Structures are given as C-alpha cells and as structure tokens.
Image (cartoon, rainbow, N blue to C red):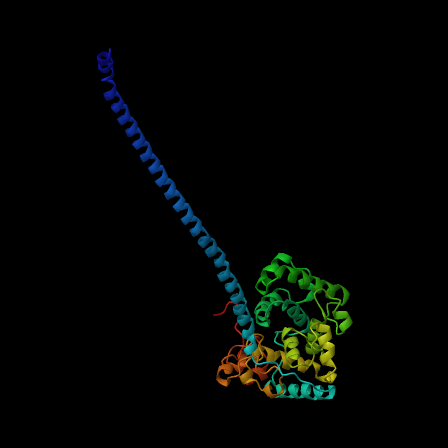
Length: 353
C-alpha cells in the first residue's frame, strides 16, 4: 500500500513547480505593470506640479503687464501736456491798463501813423457810380475784392443800370457771378436789390442809412461803404480785417460788428470814420495778417499790445508783406492815381496770366 501511494504522489511535484513558475511570472508582470503605472503616475504628478508652479508665473507675468500699460498711461498725459504747453513759448500779449483818455490818445496816434504809411488808402472795389459800388459790395461777401473786381466788368457791361439788372435772366447772371462763390444767393440779392431800386427809389441808390439797409443783401457794413465812398458821409466799415485789428490793439474786446462799430466810433471824431476804416483795412491786408502778422515790419509796433504774435525778425517779416508793400499787384483793376504813384500795381483781369 505504501508503494502505491508513493508512486501516485510523484507526478504531483512537476505540476506544482509549473504552477508556481506561472504564478511567479504573473506576479512579476503585474509588479512590472504596477511599477510602470507608478512611474507614469509619478511623472504626471511631477508635470502637474511643474505646471502649477509655472502657471502662477504666467499669471504674474500677465498681471505685471498692466503695470507697463499703467506706466505708459501715466506717461502719455505728459506728452499731451507738452504739446499743449508748446504755444506758451510764443510771446504773451502785453496787458495794457489804461484810462479811457489814454486809450483815445493811443488809438488816434495809431490812426495818424497809419495815415502816413497809407496816404493813398481807398476802397478796394472798382466802381464808377453808387449803383456799381452797392452791387460790388454785396458781391464781396465770402470772397476777395480782387475776385469781385475781376467779375463786375462783365456784369456791368451787360447790365449797366438797376432796371437792366432787375429784368435779367437769373441763369445768365449766375453764370457771370460764378467766380465769386455763392453765386445763386448773390444773384438773388443783386436782382432783388435792383428791383427795389427801380421800383422804390426811381433807379437811384438812396443816400440814407435807413433806406439802404432795407435793400436785399444790404446790411450796415455795406451801407457804410456806400455812404462813405459814394456819398462822402462818414461811416465805419467793420469787416474781418477791421474787427481783428481793433481787438489786437485792445480798442475793444467786442466781436459783434455793430458793437465794434459803436465802441470804435466813440474813440474818433465822426469826420475820421471813413478814412479810419481804409487805414485799418489796408494795414490788415498788407502787414497785420490773420495768421502771420509781420510784426518786424510794422510801423506801429511800439503802440501795439499784440506785438510778438507774428514774425519779429525784420528780414523775415519783410517777406510777408503783400500788395504794394511787397511789390505784388493790388486788388483793383483801376486803382486811384495816388495808389499808382506810390508804387501800387493794378490787378490783372479775370483769366489773365
């Protein structure tokens, strides 16, 4: 019986060994996989940790970026301030504190000085009679006297009287007046004005302010031009040049033309009003320009509180002079002889040169 049991149990050992080997192999494989998983897990954890550490750095960098923007924003106004501050380098206006009597003396002295510089001052619109002057003055709005003078010869050649212009074809008049700008509105004004003259004043231009201002397109400025230069009745012409200069000279700080007229008129005898207007307007066109006053060539510089607003260097200032002072043609095609004697040059006709 013992021999039989021994014989039966002998084959069991190889089977057990094989099973043990397989189990060992599986265990090794499992442990290898576990190790790989563990390594991957460790790597992932390290990457995550690294990314977490790196992330704040980016965030900080992003947060830090606005600091530059803030700095640039703070710096930007400095440039703006610098640009705004630049005009402060120009010579400041002299503040004049003077009594009314002192203002009157200074204003009248300026007018006397200008009368010596421009003894030939005159209205710079060509005209032969009051009708031509009132029409030319209406046309001078929003354009130069030169352009009007180049345009009116054709107009008056075709329509020499108020009756002729009152009966004119508007389209034909518009074509003639086109070079003066706003030609449709101006055509309506001059035809309406001519009709009023023909129907209400017997074809004659009235010599009273209250009648003139009733005409279409005629305001106080136009009326005073006509009264002063066609009828010899004193008036102050407040155009853009006149208003600009009297404010620069601190004769008044008013901007409304009627108020400027009243303020300046109070400084001078009525008999001087018409020539005062010519002197100031001549000076504004020739020397005391709106953008670049030729301060260095100005004969009244010692009396001017705005001296230094323009070019003060004498040589550079001379190059800014216009019309007869700079050797250029004037505004009129047919200027007075006194202007020609002073070296003035007539303006060329429309389309010439």
